[in-house]
Length: 450
Image (cartoon, rainbow, N blue to C red; front, side, top):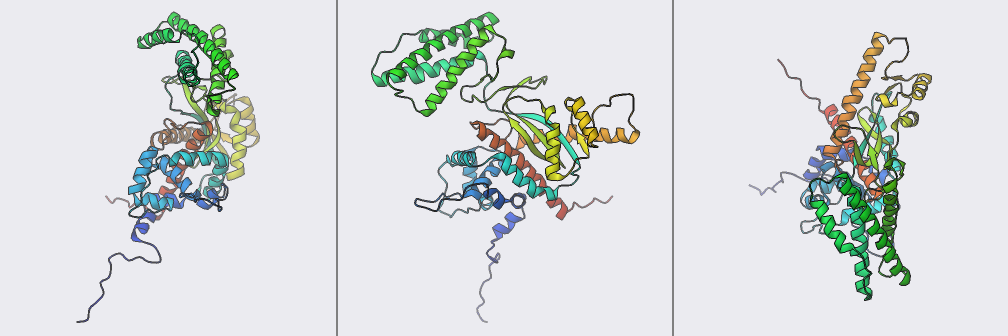
């Protein structure tokens, strides 16, 4: 009997391995297929082709890692550790590691975010994704809108905490270290005495209004004295000992000092652009009016929803009234999906101006009826259904995005960087939803027989 060559159980065909076949048929592979990678890459500048080592992760892989971070809802270190051991993530990024290869630089995600922050805008990326996805969207005549807040990862701010952080930075991080480096005597201050009193204040479970006001006045005086002493040394030594980041932080501390002095004699409602965090000075208090959380600290987003897919209309760290966005949102919807015929929004949008706009453009809304003319039975049913969809589907999407796509607390630092994380979280949820729809369409669930 002639020797017969042993046939492998899984044979590579046309350059595709069995692993790649399994990846393409998985949910992660279908999410990968729903994203227009080439169009996203075109939003970035061309890669360097000159001297020096090329970047190991290309533009495609950078976007893929950002989507994966939101998809898996894990930290940077956990993502890279899983990338080293999970071949599906490697196929998703288009970078398959060899058996003896491993990513050991755990700061690579920070550099990727810095690169994307510098070279692209989330508005342009969203436009690319909408133009690619709009052909798979049904019921484009229905537009839902609402606002939410994506909170930043900070401890709950108070005036005393903020003032003490500024005092610590001025005295311990700057003034004392600069005097030690230059070999000069420290200027006189009551910092050590105030530190003892501050620790006693923090140890108390509850502090009265008088105690808090006393602490604020003492810290404002101490901070003003520290800023003057630090500025005197910097003027004499031509800014020795401080880099650009320190000068930017000093400008923030000076602004905090002026704002806190203003708040000692004026109500908070008269202060604009109030700083609540030394490390994230772009954050503003967003009054939401909710029972369990009346004030939130993060980015306020005005969200549009079409056929279950959510898109960002406006994303800002300053508070804004969402009812003023209705006309612009309808125009934006018309640009991408065509004219809107039905609109769902809560009662804050039901201003006279918005009602007239919707009537003139023949847009049916779920707003409460005004005037003696009553709605017909069919109009009541339609209005109730639109209101139900807005209250259940849209609010449910907000909770899903926050719980499963890393948007409960935004941990990165930087105004533009936080907006990018919010954008990728929302777009990842859209890509997963489209992938699941495609899977259900190709493999419809079997009906159970009685």
